[in-house]
Amino acid sequence: MKQSKLDKRARREAKIKRRLEDETSTENHIKSFSARKAPLYNNHVYLEAPDGELLAITDQQKAAWYVKKGLGRLVEDSEKCYRVRLNFEPAGRPNSNSEKYYTTEKENQCVVCASTEQLIRKNVVPREYRKHFPTVMKTHVSHDIVLLCLKCHARSNELDFLKRAALGDQYNAPLGNENVARANLESKATF
Image 1 (cartoon, rainbow, N blue to C red):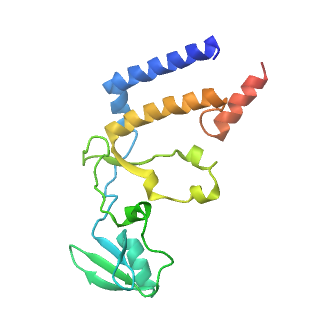
Image 2 (tube, helix red, strand yellow):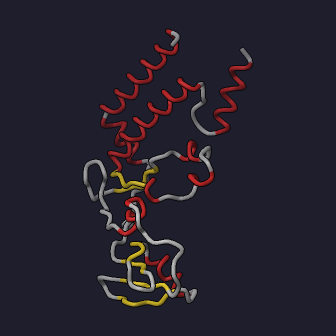
Image 3 (cartoon, one colour):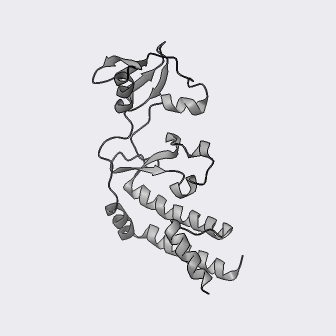
């Protein structure tokens, strides 16, 4: 790698390291985001196959949709449980470990520090990368979403930037959205 790219990377890494150590930077990041007001995971809403096998732990709005459309019936509606049983045989059932993810209760806590306060959703694969994936991988997959507290989210964003920048250097790809990329390419073309 050329010396100028190495220098640029070293400066970028030093800058991020300073920001990670600077509480003010973290506090500013926290102020710029809004934490979830309601839990992401409602672990008391169950969607079942006609024989009662658990298909998914889901949200109440989705489960109620099946009832409203006549595709399922409400089996239980209590404080502790909202259970809908489908009226039809689903195309598939959770068999693999990957599919059983949907039948597992999930904690409403930061996946890094276990805090239950000031949580925010984080896409594991950034949108700007996902749009280049094959169609089958572009669909919404809840495996791709984790909960982070705002402090861990700030740290994650800084480290994500370093990784994206390193990938950008390695593959000569611009950072940011299409408008930023186009502006960067145009400014390079004028030299």
